[in-house]
Image (cartoon, one colour):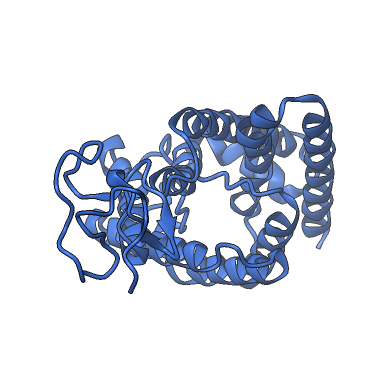
Length: 290
């Protein structure tokens, strides 16, 4: 119980610090810099929390749900996940420079989170944290199944996550935050014992890539290619899109960039009547009525 109390105090202190820094950054930095960099760094600082506890599964899942719920309600749209940033880019919701800026912020944030967590363990505020500090240089792999199975699990869970994010676009935070938190908690309880259910390439690289048990290539297959593939399938499951292709109600509009194989509208568009596609004469960006 003492270890739990110490960990809860650490989480609350870290969250309060991140919120204070986020508010200061929002007030002092230009809007674009804050939107695509500072808020991602702040989100990654607390993203490492669920993987830094070491308690029983029931208690851990409860804490994960509460942490994700608070994150979704307060952290101002930050994802702290490269696959979500890639999804926004593919759906033309973010430009290439802003996406790259988010990826850099996520990498810096997770490194800062890892350093803060190891410093916290080194304080030895409980026996559990002292043990984690001693074992950290000799960590074991979070992948406890075959590589193809692990990649399938991570990809499938990422697919479900991105379908949910797309379905909940535009919904109120009071509905979206609990739904996403519940989904991620269920995923953690199901796939967690086998892969830890990171669904986050940056987080997985920070936590488990340095651990013995598997090669770097095997880690990349499971924790990078798996979630990115799941994200891509999730976007395709909602509607076909390409960078620079605006969507309307989940489907591409009549913008020339939406035509498969088209380059600036030089190639003829698909035939009329196909769901989600455009008439070849729709050069004005007017979507085909369905």
